[in-house]
Amino acid sequence: MPFRPHYTGLIENYRDRLPVSDDTKLISLGEGNTPLLRLNNIPAVLGKDVEIYIKYEGLNPTGSFKDRGMTMAVTKAVEEGSKAIICASTGNTSASAAAYAARAGIAAFVLIPEGKIALGKLAQGMMHGATVIQIKGNFDEGMQLVKDVAEHAPVTIVNSINPFRLQGQKTAAFEIVEELSRAPDFHCLPVGNAGNITAHWMGYSEYFDDGIIKARPKMVGYQADGSAPFMRGEMVDNPETVATAIRIGHPQSWDKAWKVKEESQGWFDECTDAQILAAQKLLAEHEGIFCEPASATSLAGAINDINSGKIPEGSMIVCTLTGHGLKDPDTAIKQSTSPMLTVDATLDAVRDAILNNMAD
Ligand code: AN7
Image 1: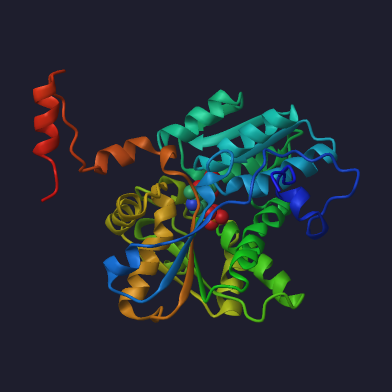
Image 2 (image 1 turned 30 degrees about the vertical axis):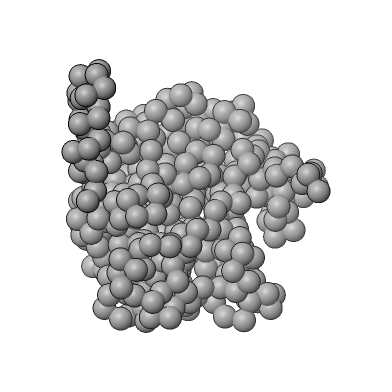
């Protein structure tokens, strides 16, 4: 059978589980339906008998998981007659908002921390025609400004405090369950505002309540140690990490995420920037999977917990890779140790370059 249905995005796919009606005009870029890849080589590198799957959310249309929530948020904004959306962002939300606003034919205003967003994300916001407002402050200050200004201007906030965002994002859990025919034992995610971990728990819980799965995973959220309010037990005012996407000290879904931890019997932990970059490299070099630093936090944390035995051998683990590696070329090139040779354009020079760099 050479034909299959035209995939038109996650709202259409999960229509009966999302807050849309037959009349709702869907704003979609074909998001969702991302690969769930089993890691073939890394468990052996670790010397551990674990089954690790990667949910490769960097393969969404704008290169991050944000598209799942944005298709819902922008669809509902348009349905409600909104002509402009606004967000504060460490980069990926702004890229996604800009793209979906362009698709919908409405305006986007994005507040970003000056100098602290990865190059690819900045390019996306600018290319899609959003009004990019760089602030001389961090994400948390931008978020407060967005909340304040939305009371004085006709704009719809599309940060994850918009409840439609989490509705869209919960579909990632549906897809995982459908492919594994069960829930994993552990689901590991990077945590910034904690919207995504909350949304995944909503998705698993919905399938659990409907009897589709018999058990839900333990939800495990990892932060960078310089930006880890969930580990400190309080807000952090000057977060710092190489993983700029999760350089967030005042998580917007604070209470919800603590509830997820309790209900799922999961936990939070932190990783160093060095561990995050090492996990990013491990995925790239041993599996051919390129994610941005923040995304690698899920695997970095899982590796720590696998090595300590907190995640026992025999476990089935899903790690979400939230954003694509191409988002942040600067950090990738900076930490790359692959040989980069410049040689004469001659047969001899190229042959020598190959023979001198062959593994024994
Ligand atoms: C790659 O774009 O908050 O815990 O403004 O871009 O749901 O916040 C990004 C967050 C993880 C954290 N990985 O997710 C933004 C923004 C990547 C991200 C997170 C983000 P949440």
